[in-house]
Image (cartoon, rainbow, N blue to C red):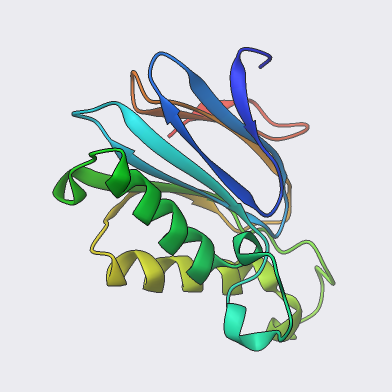
Length: 161
């Protein structure tokens, strides 16, 4: 996985084929890829929390689904991506805290996923593949040349979506 652009937690990056892009350790965090197959340009966001309006005095817009996806979308538009060609792939959003609890307030992963679905609908970007939920962390690597997203999880076989 050393040949790829790395996206850290609470960040996003843009990638042009033939480069690949990856992020590590998606527990309750969510990895969101926005991809244009015609230009082979993509963005990958690693978001931590669903809503920037729920926390005051926060200087990092990339922590939040709403602001990070909006900023990444704007940068993709500056890269001459056609918004009508954009599709999304989503991975992560696991239930990492209090796995046995029925308290959904503690299920940040599910909240991140719901926020991403809402934000992508607002941007009119369809989700074409997802691997979300459950109780394990994921590492993902996206290839904008092929449009394939590799998902790896400790103790499980790697797979593509």
